[in-house]
Length: 328
Image (cartoon, rainbow, N blue to C red; front, side, top):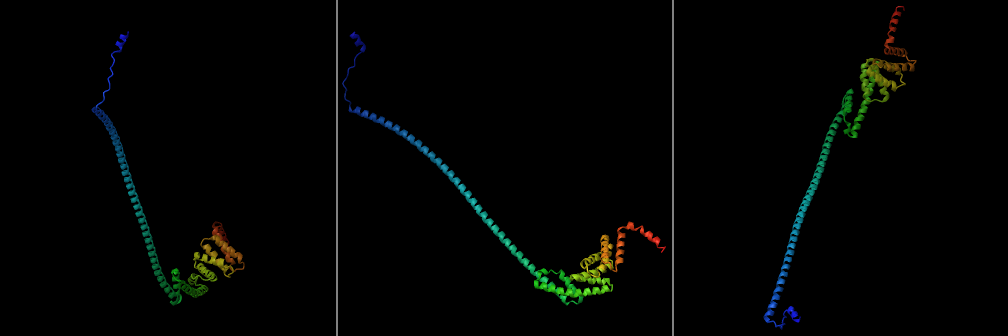
């Protein structure tokens, strides 16, 4: 049994005593260790270099991106600055141009206004001188011409534009015209009345028309209207007679000749075809002046106007009168 156990266990190793290493082996071992360490250091350095290269490359790329962004930012900034500068320059130029244009327009307007005022003053001066010359001629006509020819000066004064004259010049002309109107007007009025008494109606018309053209006082104007209206009635110019006689009848109700004027006015109304007014005037006169010597004529005028207003009713009366005349 013991032998089989020894056989199974096999031969035993014989322990040999450790031999001391030599210097060469130590050096080789140290050298091997240094080589391994150097190799590890090289690998580590290579890894560090690779990492450093990657980081340097990343930094370079970031720097390039930064430079690109900076370049774009600079370009945009330059463009914006250029746009702003151009816009500001255009605005300043436009403002200066607008200001210069406004100033030019203002100066042109001022020059135009001053030129217009100067031309107006020249025209006013020329017109004033012309009117002064005409006024001198008119004044000489009213003072130096003989007789009734001085009335031409009054006619010229009516046509003269006295608004350009001074107050003193205008007053002198008006005073002279007023004196001349009184002188010639009174003379024309007296001559017209004398002609009326002589039954010279053409002379009455010329003198009374001249007198009324001189704007006489109200009382004299009413008398002149009576004389002139009577003259027009006698010369059968009834259209002109109506307003003159109506003016006298309405204006002077206390006149002694009002009944005669109403008779003439009714006649003139009849002749111009205004039968209603003719009948009204004739009836008013017949009722107002019962003791007038013209009562029969008032009644005759009323009858005549009624026949003219109703010609059909008046026609049968004519044969009856014709048949009664032989028996008289």
